[in-house]
Image 1 (cartoon, rainbow, N blue to C red):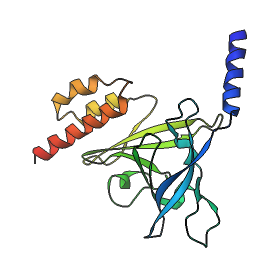
Image 2: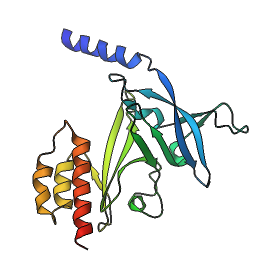
Image 3: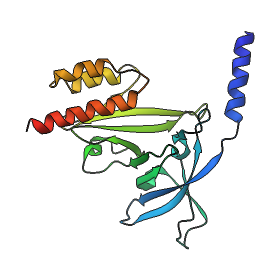
Length: 209
């Protein structure tokens, strides 16, 4: 009981600890607009690793600063459903691209009612997108992954009762030599390994045409 009390105390203390807000350069495109804007946005770092960006910073609202547009206030709040495109370089120097559902391309297969921004992780024969959301109870950031294959009508949603490995084995069954790579997926370089599998599958399909 004492251990549980201590753990809860730590959790509450950590949740209450203010996260440092940082301003980074970004490119965004609002819906119903053809003009991209070069702006600064407010984001926070991961609570436990300051080199990781907290994607929860813009799950509900994106705070945009100094757009050089005099008609805007100094700080403007935009909801994800108001955007078509967002691009920035994170704390590790990686370019991050977030897009809304479109009427063409892989994301056209997503539910039209889903107004979120999806991180574009790979676009090809099997495209890979990630959606971020905030937990209603503790405001922690939750990730949901989708695989969208060209010859499939619906996206494959990775949920509690399935796995990336299981779905990739199904999606890439026409390329048996990828099975060892898929079976070897582990948590250490998870995203990198999935990306390499999708690239290999893309090359296979390109060479088979």
